[in-house]
Length: 489
Ligand code: G6P
Image 1 (cartoon, rainbow, N blue to C red):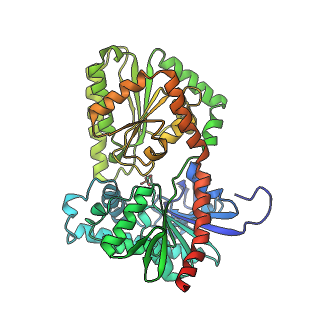
Image 2: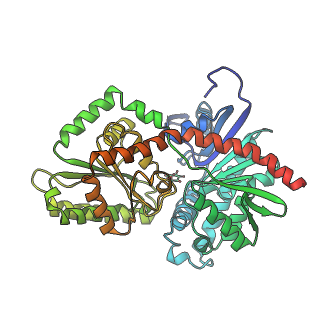
Image 3: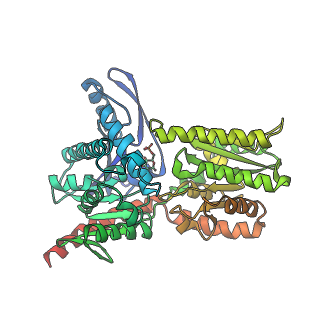
Protein backbone atom coordinates (compact mmCIF):
# COMPACT_ATOMS: atom_id res chain seq x y z
CA UNK A 1 0.00 0.00 0.00
CA UNK A 2 2.97 2.32 -0.30
CA UNK A 3 2.84 5.29 -2.62
CA UNK A 4 4.35 4.49 -5.99
CA UNK A 5 6.37 7.71 -6.12
CA UNK A 6 7.96 7.05 -2.71
CA UNK A 7 6.65 10.31 -1.20
CA UNK A 8 5.03 10.12 2.24
CA UNK A 9 1.24 10.01 2.49
CA UNK A 10 -0.20 13.30 3.63
CA UNK A 11 -3.09 11.84 5.66
CA UNK A 12 -4.35 8.59 7.09
CA UNK A 13 -7.72 7.15 6.19
CA UNK A 14 -9.36 4.88 8.75
CA UNK A 15 -11.93 2.74 6.98
CA UNK A 16 -14.40 1.19 9.40
CA UNK A 17 -16.68 -1.61 8.20
CA UNK A 18 -18.40 -4.50 9.93
CA UNK A 19 -16.14 -6.96 8.13
CA UNK A 20 -12.43 -6.83 7.48
CA UNK A 21 -11.53 -7.70 3.88
CA UNK A 22 -9.86 -10.94 5.00
CA UNK A 23 -10.82 -14.46 5.85
CA UNK A 24 -8.92 -15.62 8.89
CA UNK A 25 -8.42 -19.31 9.65
CA UNK A 26 -6.79 -20.41 12.87
CA UNK A 27 -3.96 -22.86 12.30
CA UNK A 28 -2.68 -23.20 15.87
CA UNK A 29 -2.74 -21.46 19.24
CA UNK A 30 -0.74 -18.52 17.92
CA UNK A 31 -0.90 -19.00 14.20
CA UNK A 32 -3.39 -17.70 11.68
CA UNK A 33 -3.68 -17.98 7.94
CA UNK A 34 -5.11 -14.87 6.29
CA UNK A 35 -6.59 -14.57 2.86
CA UNK A 36 -7.19 -11.03 1.64
CA UNK A 37 -10.28 -10.61 -0.51
CA UNK A 38 -9.03 -8.70 -3.51
CA UNK A 39 -12.40 -7.13 -4.32
CA UNK A 40 -12.96 -3.77 -5.99
CA UNK A 41 -13.88 -2.09 -2.71
CA UNK A 42 -10.55 -3.05 -1.19
CA UNK A 43 -8.49 -1.68 -4.06
CA UNK A 44 -10.65 1.45 -4.22
CA UNK A 45 -10.28 2.22 -0.54
CA UNK A 46 -6.64 1.38 -0.31
CA UNK A 47 -5.82 3.31 -3.45
CA UNK A 48 -7.27 6.70 -2.48
CA UNK A 49 -4.67 9.25 -3.58
CA UNK A 50 -2.53 10.79 -0.84
CA UNK A 51 -4.14 8.72 1.91
CA UNK A 52 -2.64 5.80 3.73
CA UNK A 53 -5.56 3.51 4.48
CA UNK A 54 -6.08 1.28 7.48
CA UNK A 55 -9.11 -0.97 7.81
CA UNK A 56 -10.90 -1.57 11.12
CA UNK A 57 -13.51 -4.32 11.41
CA UNK A 58 -14.63 -7.72 12.66
CA UNK A 59 -12.54 -10.62 11.37
CA UNK A 60 -15.64 -12.83 11.04
CA UNK A 61 -14.36 -15.41 13.58
CA UNK A 62 -14.88 -15.97 17.28
CA UNK A 63 -11.56 -15.67 19.16
CA UNK A 64 -12.35 -16.07 22.86
CA UNK A 65 -8.76 -16.32 24.15
CA UNK A 66 -6.24 -13.53 24.59
CA UNK A 67 -3.39 -15.50 23.02
CA UNK A 68 -5.40 -16.00 19.84
CA UNK A 69 -6.51 -12.36 19.78
CA UNK A 70 -2.95 -11.08 20.15
CA UNK A 71 -1.66 -13.39 17.43
CA UNK A 72 -4.44 -12.40 15.03
CA UNK A 73 -3.96 -8.70 15.77
CA UNK A 74 -0.26 -9.07 14.94
CA UNK A 75 -0.88 -10.98 11.72
CA UNK A 76 -3.51 -8.47 10.60
CA UNK A 77 -1.26 -5.49 11.35
CA UNK A 78 0.97 -6.58 8.46
CA UNK A 79 -2.02 -6.10 6.15
CA UNK A 80 -2.87 -2.74 7.76
CA UNK A 81 -6.01 -4.27 9.25
CA UNK A 82 -7.14 -3.79 12.85
CA UNK A 83 -9.59 -6.28 14.35
CA UNK A 84 -12.62 -5.62 16.54
CA UNK A 85 -13.33 -8.75 18.60
CA UNK A 86 -17.01 -9.57 19.07
CA UNK A 87 -18.12 -12.51 21.18
CA UNK A 88 -20.64 -15.07 19.93
CA UNK A 89 -23.59 -13.62 21.83
CA UNK A 90 -23.00 -10.10 20.46
CA UNK A 91 -22.60 -11.47 16.94
CA UNK A 92 -25.87 -13.33 17.31
CA UNK A 93 -27.82 -10.32 18.59
CA UNK A 94 -26.08 -7.56 16.62
CA UNK A 95 -25.09 -9.16 13.30
CA UNK A 96 -27.62 -12.00 12.82
CA UNK A 97 -30.32 -10.14 14.74
CA UNK A 98 -30.50 -6.38 14.46
CA UNK A 99 -28.40 -5.98 11.27
CA UNK A 100 -29.54 -8.87 9.15
CA UNK A 101 -32.99 -9.69 10.49
CA UNK A 102 -34.21 -6.12 11.08
CA UNK A 103 -32.30 -3.36 9.26
CA UNK A 104 -31.39 -5.32 6.11
CA UNK A 105 -34.96 -6.44 5.22
CA UNK A 106 -36.43 -3.08 6.25
CA UNK A 107 -34.04 -1.05 4.11
CA UNK A 108 -34.92 -3.32 1.16
CA UNK A 109 -38.67 -2.76 1.66
CA UNK A 110 -39.31 -6.27 3.00
CA UNK A 111 -40.69 -4.89 6.27
CA UNK A 112 -39.97 -5.73 9.88
CA UNK A 113 -40.31 -9.31 11.12
CA UNK A 114 -43.88 -9.74 12.38
CA UNK A 115 -43.02 -10.55 15.98
CA UNK A 116 -40.89 -7.45 16.24
CA UNK A 117 -43.44 -4.95 15.03
CA UNK A 118 -44.02 -3.88 18.61
CA UNK A 119 -40.97 -2.24 20.09
CA UNK A 120 -41.83 -3.85 23.39
CA UNK A 121 -40.82 -7.37 22.40
CA UNK A 122 -37.75 -8.59 24.23
CA UNK A 123 -36.14 -9.74 20.99
CA UNK A 124 -36.14 -6.33 19.43
CA UNK A 125 -34.96 -4.49 22.54
CA UNK A 126 -32.08 -6.78 23.31
CA UNK A 127 -30.95 -6.83 19.67
CA UNK A 128 -31.00 -3.06 19.56
CA UNK A 129 -28.96 -2.86 22.78
CA UNK A 130 -26.45 -5.30 21.30
CA UNK A 131 -26.28 -3.21 18.12
CA UNK A 132 -25.43 -0.11 20.14
CA UNK A 133 -22.94 -2.04 22.22
CA UNK A 134 -21.22 -3.43 19.11
CA UNK A 135 -21.02 0.07 17.60
CA UNK A 136 -19.43 1.30 20.84
CA UNK A 137 -16.88 -1.51 20.62
CA UNK A 138 -15.96 -0.43 17.08
CA UNK A 139 -15.71 3.19 18.26
CA UNK A 140 -13.36 2.26 21.10
CA UNK A 141 -10.98 0.58 18.64
CA UNK A 142 -11.15 3.52 16.22
CA UNK A 143 -10.48 5.96 19.05
CA UNK A 144 -7.48 3.94 20.20
CA UNK A 145 -5.88 4.12 16.76
CA UNK A 146 -6.99 7.63 15.81
CA UNK A 147 -4.35 10.32 15.38
CA UNK A 148 -4.96 14.02 14.83
CA UNK A 149 -5.61 14.73 11.16
CA UNK A 150 -6.94 11.25 10.33
CA UNK A 151 -10.11 10.94 8.29
CA UNK A 152 -12.59 8.27 9.42
CA UNK A 153 -14.91 6.65 6.90
CA UNK A 154 -17.66 4.44 8.39
CA UNK A 155 -19.51 1.97 6.18
CA UNK A 156 -22.98 0.56 5.97
CA UNK A 157 -26.05 -0.23 7.99
CA UNK A 158 -24.12 -2.18 10.63
CA UNK A 159 -22.52 1.02 11.89
CA UNK A 160 -25.22 3.69 12.00
CA UNK A 161 -24.39 4.51 15.61
CA UNK A 162 -20.71 4.85 14.98
CA UNK A 163 -20.57 8.54 13.88
CA UNK A 164 -22.23 9.56 17.14
CA UNK A 165 -19.98 7.34 19.27
CA UNK A 166 -16.88 8.74 17.53
CA UNK A 167 -17.93 12.36 17.95
CA UNK A 168 -18.54 11.66 21.66
CA UNK A 169 -14.88 10.71 21.91
CA UNK A 170 -13.62 13.65 19.89
CA UNK A 171 -15.85 16.24 18.24
CA UNK A 172 -13.03 17.29 15.89
CA UNK A 173 -12.74 13.88 14.23
CA UNK A 174 -13.61 14.06 10.53
CA UNK A 175 -16.28 11.41 10.17
CA UNK A 176 -18.02 10.24 7.01
CA UNK A 177 -20.67 7.53 6.74
CA UNK A 178 -21.68 5.74 3.55
CA UNK A 179 -24.65 3.40 3.14
CA UNK A 180 -24.19 0.52 0.70
CA UNK A 181 -27.88 -0.46 0.75
CA UNK A 182 -30.90 1.58 -0.31
CA UNK A 183 -32.22 4.07 2.22
CA UNK A 184 -35.97 3.47 2.05
CA UNK A 185 -38.82 5.94 1.84
CA UNK A 186 -39.35 7.80 5.12
CA UNK A 187 -42.70 6.00 5.40
CA UNK A 188 -40.80 2.71 5.70
CA UNK A 189 -38.09 4.05 7.99
CA UNK A 190 -40.67 5.46 10.37
CA UNK A 191 -41.95 1.95 11.18
CA UNK A 192 -38.63 1.16 12.88
CA UNK A 193 -38.99 1.48 16.66
CA UNK A 194 -35.50 3.02 16.99
CA UNK A 195 -35.99 5.30 13.95
CA UNK A 196 -35.06 8.62 15.64
CA UNK A 197 -32.05 7.40 17.58
CA UNK A 198 -30.51 5.96 14.43
CA UNK A 199 -31.08 9.13 12.39
CA UNK A 200 -29.58 11.34 15.09
CA UNK A 201 -26.56 9.07 15.36
CA UNK A 202 -25.90 9.19 11.60
CA UNK A 203 -26.34 12.98 11.55
CA UNK A 204 -23.38 13.29 13.90
CA UNK A 205 -21.22 12.56 10.82
CA UNK A 206 -19.86 15.43 8.70
CA UNK A 207 -20.69 13.78 5.39
CA UNK A 208 -23.38 11.17 4.73
CA UNK A 209 -23.31 9.39 1.37
CA UNK A 210 -25.65 7.14 -0.62
CA UNK A 211 -25.46 5.40 -3.99
CA UNK A 212 -28.30 7.37 -5.57
CA UNK A 213 -29.96 10.72 -5.34
CA UNK A 214 -33.25 9.00 -4.38
CA UNK A 215 -31.74 7.33 -1.31
CA UNK A 216 -30.22 10.67 -0.23
CA UNK A 217 -33.61 12.34 -0.69
CA UNK A 218 -35.34 9.62 1.38
CA UNK A 219 -32.83 10.14 4.17
CA UNK A 220 -33.31 13.90 4.21
CA UNK A 221 -37.13 13.42 4.22
CA UNK A 222 -36.81 11.02 7.16
CA UNK A 223 -34.83 13.68 9.06
CA UNK A 224 -37.33 16.42 8.28
CA UNK A 225 -40.50 14.36 8.84
CA UNK A 226 -39.44 12.19 11.76
CA UNK A 227 -37.01 14.52 13.54
CA UNK A 228 -38.55 17.83 12.45
CA UNK A 229 -35.16 19.14 11.25
CA UNK A 230 -34.54 21.41 8.33
CA UNK A 231 -33.48 19.90 5.01
CA UNK A 232 -31.45 22.09 2.64
CA UNK A 233 -30.12 21.32 -0.87
CA UNK A 234 -26.79 20.52 0.81
CA UNK A 235 -28.03 18.27 3.59
CA UNK A 236 -29.64 18.50 7.01
CA UNK A 237 -29.24 21.27 9.56
CA UNK A 238 -29.46 20.60 13.25
CA UNK A 239 -28.80 23.37 15.77
CA UNK A 240 -26.42 25.22 13.46
CA UNK A 241 -24.50 22.11 12.38
CA UNK A 242 -24.84 21.12 8.75
CA UNK A 243 -24.48 17.46 7.88
CA UNK A 244 -23.72 17.23 4.17
CA UNK A 245 -25.85 14.59 2.44
CA UNK A 246 -25.05 13.59 -1.14
CA UNK A 247 -25.04 10.79 -3.71
CA UNK A 248 -21.78 9.00 -4.54
CA UNK A 249 -22.56 6.12 -6.93
CA UNK A 250 -20.02 3.35 -6.48
CA UNK A 251 -18.27 1.61 -9.40
CA UNK A 252 -15.89 -1.31 -9.92
CA UNK A 253 -12.21 -1.69 -10.71
CA UNK A 254 -13.14 -2.30 -14.37
CA UNK A 255 -9.50 -2.62 -15.51
CA UNK A 256 -9.02 -5.62 -13.25
CA UNK A 257 -11.81 -7.47 -15.08
CA UNK A 258 -10.74 -6.35 -18.55
CA UNK A 259 -7.13 -7.38 -17.93
CA UNK A 260 -8.18 -10.76 -16.54
CA UNK A 261 -9.79 -11.71 -19.85
CA UNK A 262 -6.33 -11.88 -21.44
CA UNK A 263 -4.90 -14.29 -18.87
CA UNK A 264 -4.22 -17.82 -20.18
CA UNK A 265 -6.16 -19.39 -17.31
CA UNK A 266 -9.26 -17.29 -18.04
CA UNK A 267 -8.96 -17.98 -21.78
CA UNK A 268 -8.86 -21.70 -21.02
CA UNK A 269 -11.99 -21.42 -18.86
CA UNK A 270 -13.70 -19.50 -21.69
CA UNK A 271 -12.84 -22.19 -24.22
CA UNK A 272 -14.09 -24.96 -21.91
CA UNK A 273 -17.36 -23.15 -21.28
CA UNK A 274 -17.90 -22.47 -24.98
CA UNK A 275 -17.46 -26.16 -25.76
CA UNK A 276 -19.63 -27.23 -22.87
CA UNK A 277 -22.57 -25.03 -23.93
CA UNK A 278 -22.07 -25.18 -27.69
CA UNK A 279 -25.31 -24.61 -29.61
CA UNK A 280 -27.03 -23.05 -26.62
CA UNK A 281 -27.43 -19.47 -25.49
CA UNK A 282 -26.07 -18.90 -22.00
CA UNK A 283 -28.08 -16.91 -19.47
CA UNK A 284 -26.39 -16.05 -16.19
CA UNK A 285 -27.37 -15.04 -12.66
CA UNK A 286 -24.74 -14.35 -9.99
CA UNK A 287 -26.13 -13.41 -6.59
CA UNK A 288 -25.60 -13.88 -2.89
CA UNK A 289 -28.38 -16.27 -1.83
CA UNK A 290 -30.39 -13.44 -0.30
CA UNK A 291 -34.12 -12.72 -0.45
CA UNK A 292 -33.49 -9.24 -1.86
CA UNK A 293 -31.92 -10.77 -4.98
CA UNK A 294 -35.25 -12.15 -6.23
CA UNK A 295 -33.81 -15.56 -7.17
CA UNK A 296 -37.10 -17.54 -6.90
CA UNK A 297 -38.92 -14.87 -8.96
CA UNK A 298 -36.16 -14.95 -11.60
CA UNK A 299 -36.32 -18.74 -11.91
CA UNK A 300 -40.11 -18.68 -12.14
CA UNK A 301 -39.84 -16.10 -14.95
CA UNK A 302 -37.41 -18.40 -16.75
CA UNK A 303 -39.90 -21.24 -16.33
CA UNK A 304 -42.64 -19.09 -17.84
CA UNK A 305 -40.36 -18.26 -20.78
CA UNK A 306 -39.70 -21.99 -21.38
CA UNK A 307 -43.39 -22.75 -21.05
CA UNK A 308 -44.32 -20.18 -23.70
CA UNK A 309 -41.39 -20.71 -26.09
CA UNK A 310 -40.95 -24.41 -26.67
CA UNK A 311 -38.59 -23.84 -29.61
CA UNK A 312 -36.04 -22.38 -27.16
CA UNK A 313 -36.19 -25.23 -24.65
CA UNK A 314 -33.07 -27.08 -25.75
CA UNK A 315 -31.30 -24.00 -27.01
CA UNK A 316 -30.87 -22.05 -23.80
CA UNK A 317 -29.42 -22.71 -20.37
CA UNK A 318 -29.64 -20.65 -17.18
CA UNK A 319 -26.55 -20.78 -14.96
CA UNK A 320 -27.42 -19.52 -11.51
CA UNK A 321 -24.52 -18.99 -9.11
CA UNK A 322 -26.03 -18.51 -5.66
CA UNK A 323 -23.39 -17.71 -3.06
CA UNK A 324 -24.45 -18.81 0.45
CA UNK A 325 -24.59 -15.95 2.93
CA UNK A 326 -25.73 -15.30 6.54
CA UNK A 327 -26.53 -18.97 6.92
CA UNK A 328 -27.32 -18.65 10.65
CA UNK A 329 -30.36 -16.46 9.94
CA UNK A 330 -33.54 -18.62 9.58
CA UNK A 331 -34.94 -16.55 6.67
CA UNK A 332 -31.86 -17.38 4.62
CA UNK A 333 -32.15 -21.08 5.43
CA UNK A 334 -35.78 -21.07 4.26
CA UNK A 335 -34.79 -19.32 1.03
CA UNK A 336 -32.18 -21.99 0.22
CA UNK A 337 -34.76 -24.78 0.46
CA UNK A 338 -37.28 -22.76 -1.52
CA UNK A 339 -34.83 -22.16 -4.39
CA UNK A 340 -33.76 -25.82 -4.44
CA UNK A 341 -37.37 -26.92 -4.60
CA UNK A 342 -38.18 -24.64 -7.56
CA UNK A 343 -35.01 -25.53 -9.50
CA UNK A 344 -35.66 -29.25 -8.97
CA UNK A 345 -39.24 -28.94 -10.16
CA UNK A 346 -38.32 -27.02 -13.33
CA UNK A 347 -35.42 -29.30 -14.22
CA UNK A 348 -37.72 -32.29 -13.70
CA UNK A 349 -40.31 -30.68 -15.92
CA UNK A 350 -38.12 -29.51 -18.84
CA UNK A 351 -34.95 -31.60 -18.50
CA UNK A 352 -34.03 -34.42 -20.88
CA UNK A 353 -31.64 -37.35 -20.54
CA UNK A 354 -28.95 -35.10 -22.07
CA UNK A 355 -29.46 -31.83 -20.34
CA UNK A 356 -31.30 -29.66 -17.82
CA UNK A 357 -32.39 -26.05 -18.34
CA UNK A 358 -31.01 -24.72 -15.03
CA UNK A 359 -27.57 -25.27 -13.54
CA UNK A 360 -27.77 -24.03 -10.00
CA UNK A 361 -24.63 -23.77 -7.83
CA UNK A 362 -24.71 -23.00 -4.10
CA UNK A 363 -21.18 -21.64 -3.99
CA UNK A 364 -18.94 -18.83 -5.15
CA UNK A 365 -16.53 -19.11 -8.08
CA UNK A 366 -12.93 -17.99 -8.11
CA UNK A 367 -12.20 -14.72 -9.90
CA UNK A 368 -10.90 -16.29 -13.10
CA UNK A 369 -13.83 -18.68 -13.49
CA UNK A 370 -16.23 -15.83 -12.81
CA UNK A 371 -14.67 -13.56 -15.46
CA UNK A 372 -14.82 -16.40 -17.99
CA UNK A 373 -18.48 -17.00 -17.19
CA UNK A 374 -19.29 -13.32 -17.62
CA UNK A 375 -17.45 -13.32 -20.95
CA UNK A 376 -19.36 -16.27 -22.47
CA UNK A 377 -22.78 -15.12 -21.29
CA UNK A 378 -25.39 -14.02 -23.84
CA UNK A 379 -27.90 -12.61 -21.37
CA UNK A 380 -27.30 -11.63 -17.73
CA UNK A 381 -30.27 -11.56 -15.39
CA UNK A 382 -29.95 -9.13 -12.48
CA UNK A 383 -33.46 -9.08 -11.09
CA UNK A 384 -33.08 -7.95 -7.47
CA UNK A 385 -36.30 -7.00 -5.67
CA UNK A 386 -34.23 -4.12 -4.22
CA UNK A 387 -30.50 -3.54 -4.33
CA UNK A 388 -28.33 -0.64 -3.19
CA UNK A 389 -26.37 -0.62 -6.44
CA UNK A 390 -25.58 -4.17 -7.69
CA UNK A 391 -22.08 -4.51 -8.98
CA UNK A 392 -22.64 -7.87 -10.72
CA UNK A 393 -24.27 -5.85 -13.49
CA UNK A 394 -21.10 -3.72 -13.77
CA UNK A 395 -18.79 -6.75 -13.73
CA UNK A 396 -20.79 -8.41 -16.49
CA UNK A 397 -20.61 -5.30 -18.69
CA UNK A 398 -16.85 -4.98 -18.11
CA UNK A 399 -16.32 -8.53 -19.44
CA UNK A 400 -18.57 -8.19 -22.50
CA UNK A 401 -16.64 -5.96 -24.85
CA UNK A 402 -16.24 -8.82 -27.34
CA UNK A 403 -19.59 -10.52 -27.06
CA UNK A 404 -21.85 -7.51 -26.40
CA UNK A 405 -24.46 -9.53 -24.53
CA UNK A 406 -27.67 -8.16 -23.07
CA UNK A 407 -28.23 -7.09 -19.48
CA UNK A 408 -31.71 -7.56 -18.04
CA UNK A 409 -31.79 -5.33 -14.99
CA UNK A 410 -34.26 -4.72 -12.20
CA UNK A 411 -35.59 -1.19 -12.03
CA UNK A 412 -35.22 -1.52 -8.24
CA UNK A 413 -31.43 -1.85 -8.31
CA UNK A 414 -29.43 1.36 -7.89
CA UNK A 415 -27.59 0.37 -11.10
CA UNK A 416 -30.80 0.99 -13.07
CA UNK A 417 -30.04 4.69 -12.76
CA UNK A 418 -26.63 4.35 -14.40
CA UNK A 419 -27.05 1.36 -16.75
CA UNK A 420 -30.76 1.84 -17.48
CA UNK A 421 -30.21 3.21 -20.99
CA UNK A 422 -28.21 0.16 -22.07
CA UNK A 423 -30.08 -2.56 -20.19
CA UNK A 424 -33.58 -3.95 -20.58
CA UNK A 425 -35.26 -2.74 -17.39
CA UNK A 426 -37.82 -4.99 -15.71
CA UNK A 427 -40.08 -5.09 -12.69
CA UNK A 428 -38.80 -8.31 -11.06
CA UNK A 429 -42.13 -8.91 -9.31
CA UNK A 430 -43.83 -9.17 -12.70
CA UNK A 431 -42.89 -12.61 -13.97
CA UNK A 432 -44.58 -12.02 -17.35
CA UNK A 433 -42.54 -8.84 -17.82
CA UNK A 434 -39.29 -10.71 -17.08
CA UNK A 435 -40.23 -13.66 -19.34
CA UNK A 436 -40.90 -11.18 -22.19
CA UNK A 437 -37.56 -9.45 -21.53
CA UNK A 438 -35.77 -12.81 -21.79
CA UNK A 439 -37.36 -13.39 -25.19
CA UNK A 440 -36.47 -9.89 -26.35
CA UNK A 441 -32.88 -10.25 -25.14
CA UNK A 442 -32.34 -13.62 -26.83
CA UNK A 443 -33.69 -12.29 -30.13
CA UNK A 444 -32.04 -8.87 -30.03
CA UNK A 445 -30.29 -7.90 -33.30
CA UNK A 446 -26.56 -7.36 -32.99
CA UNK A 447 -26.68 -3.65 -33.94
CA UNK A 448 -28.98 -2.94 -31.01
CA UNK A 449 -26.87 -5.07 -28.65
CA UNK A 450 -23.79 -3.13 -29.68
CA UNK A 451 -25.42 0.22 -29.12
CA UNK A 452 -26.68 -0.74 -25.68
CA UNK A 453 -23.39 -2.30 -24.66
CA UNK A 454 -21.41 0.75 -25.77
CA UNK A 455 -23.41 2.97 -23.46
CA UNK A 456 -22.95 0.68 -20.45
CA UNK A 457 -19.29 -0.09 -21.12
CA UNK A 458 -18.50 3.59 -21.26
CA UNK A 459 -20.21 4.15 -17.93
CA UNK A 460 -18.58 1.19 -16.17
CA UNK A 461 -15.08 2.10 -17.35
CA UNK A 462 -15.36 5.79 -16.51
CA UNK A 463 -17.16 5.64 -13.13
CA UNK A 464 -14.78 3.41 -11.24
CA UNK A 465 -14.49 2.35 -7.61
CA UNK A 466 -11.30 4.35 -7.27
CA UNK A 467 -12.98 7.52 -8.49
CA UNK A 468 -15.89 6.89 -6.10
CA UNK A 469 -13.62 6.53 -3.08
CA UNK A 470 -11.53 9.55 -4.01
CA UNK A 471 -14.56 11.77 -4.50
CA UNK A 472 -16.06 10.78 -1.15
CA UNK A 473 -12.83 11.22 0.79
CA UNK A 474 -11.92 14.55 -0.78
CA UNK A 475 -15.44 15.84 -0.19
CA UNK A 476 -15.24 14.67 3.41
CA UNK A 477 -12.01 16.58 3.84
CA UNK A 478 -13.62 19.77 2.46
CA UNK A 479 -16.95 19.31 4.20
CA UNK A 480 -15.64 19.70 7.68
CA UNK A 481 -14.17 23.05 6.79
CA UNK A 482 -17.44 24.06 5.20
CA UNK A 483 -19.42 22.85 8.21
CA UNK A 484 -17.21 24.73 10.64
CA UNK A 485 -17.48 27.90 8.59
CA UNK A 486 -21.25 27.62 8.57
CA UNK A 487 -21.38 27.18 12.33
CA UNK A 488 -19.32 30.33 12.77
CA UNK A 489 -21.56 32.47 10.52
C1 G6P B 1 -23.96 -6.33 1.38
C2 G6P B 1 -23.63 -5.33 2.48
C3 G6P B 1 -22.17 -5.47 2.91
C4 G6P B 1 -21.90 -6.91 3.30
C5 G6P B 1 -22.23 -7.83 2.13
C6 G6P B 1 -22.02 -9.33 2.46
O1 G6P B 1 -23.31 -6.00 0.21
O2 G6P B 1 -23.92 -4.02 2.04
O3 G6P B 1 -21.90 -4.64 4.01
O4 G6P B 1 -20.57 -7.10 3.71
O5 G6P B 1 -23.59 -7.65 1.77
O6 G6P B 1 -22.76 -9.70 3.59
P1 G6P B 1 -22.10 -10.27 4.93
O7 G6P B 1 -23.22 -10.30 5.91
O8 G6P B 1 -21.60 -11.62 4.54
O9 G6P B 1 -20.98 -9.34 5.33
